[in-house]
Length: 132
Image (cartoon, rainbow, N blue to C red; front, side, top):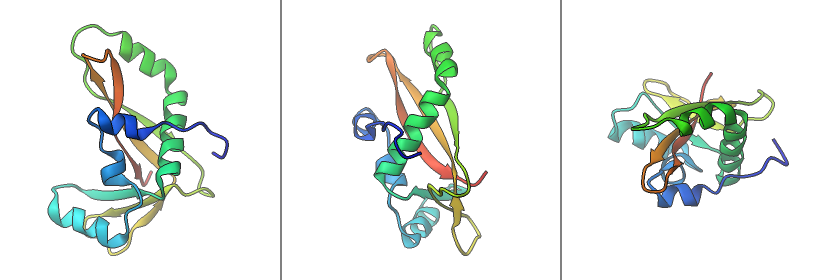
């Protein structure tokens, strides 16, 4: 993934996204706290911002045709989910499932896009590592 362009997730955060705020650089204690505070099945974190931005950029590029079809729709657009699948030799983060003692290493991620009618374009609502 080295050399992959990056997506500036700060732009997405400014438009309503929360990848940086909830899914980047968290420790195990932070993951446990999220599970305790929120009704979610797992809490996950990218290793760092650079990894998150490269994963998102790669997923957007790989899913370009799907995103273009979704973008051309008229009317209300439901959120679009695209996926990243890396290789096991290059972990991108960790995920802690509810009821588990330790987080698992991740090399896959889910990216959720939301359409903004006023901007007439999408933003990354969230992106997070997941165990495939």
